[in-house]
Length: 396
Ligand code: HEM
Image (cartoon, rainbow, N blue to C red):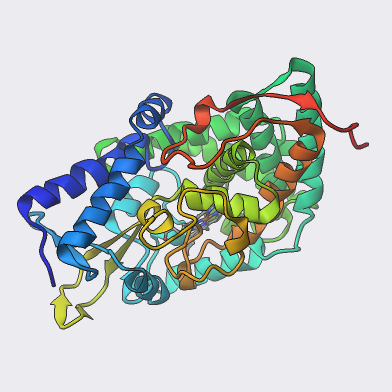
């Protein structure tokens, strides 16, 4: 198996990994996102990955990082294998994820291992399964209000969209009684900001306790029609912080799908392919694994840098354009905006329903300008701002 030269390791770290960390892994940093868009950092990251593959071939590439075994995957079939063979021997709960997420969801499925993980994963699948609540109705309701608001100001920008989106998220997860509880998601945001710094930031237990108390009060209501009505509050309490946190990604993707002129679930999937909100999918091996004749030690970190796999012009003729026709069953195993295999996002269907319905309702109510191909490699959602006009009467 090839080992990257020191210079190429530095290139991979500085052009691929560091910009991703700087943008904010758990919650995006607006100033860095603006700079990242100006520099189109994802374009240079993808070019770096292509150059590495041209130089070293398709096998996993070992990086020269002292004291750690770290490999960068360069071939779609290796991505398929690592995701299919999760969580054993390729665990989702890597040391980086544990460090980042323990600030707000120490018992989440994503950071658990062994029987606790199996139990928590099943719980997520059960509650988030499609059809258990009418998420589309909530999405239409909130989108109608947003259409009215945007039509009256003539603008739809990220800030206005995000406010509506968080109301929707709180309503779906916790019910109408949480719709206006901005303090809940603001506290979570502060905890997530600490998560960006992973081990470098001290844990703020008082803030976590306050968040937990507020959350608990909403869960105890078990409001019919919300996810909180579907299970025991104690079990929910461990997983709901992740759900609320992950709704952020779903809002970002919806706004980008609007910028694309996308429609429905395929529009959401395309926005998530073009600008993945989980740009680095990490796995850590729980035992030695064999790769094309080489054995990699237990504890090896496997890095899947999704922007490269999603937008590699050498493999994908549609790399930089809107291509809804490739979904729902793309012919390439490395198109994985929601991951794949046993660790696939259990919220995927809920996201596609909620975000797809919101997207279509906004498009039905408002007219927008949209981006043309070739689409930019980096798109700063914070600065998206559409002049809008009313295109249809409001639904009642
Ligand atoms: C656009 C929106 C979203 C995207 C692109 C997305 C993507 C992903 C990806 C790539 C993973 C795998 C992470 C890894 O392997 O480290 C994941 C995991 C997960 N997602 Fe999502 N997600 C989204 C929204 C949501 C929502 C709204 C929920 C819940 C309501 C959710 C619940 C989860 C959970 C619980 C896991 C952990 C699964 C496990 O431990 O096996 N996600 N998601």
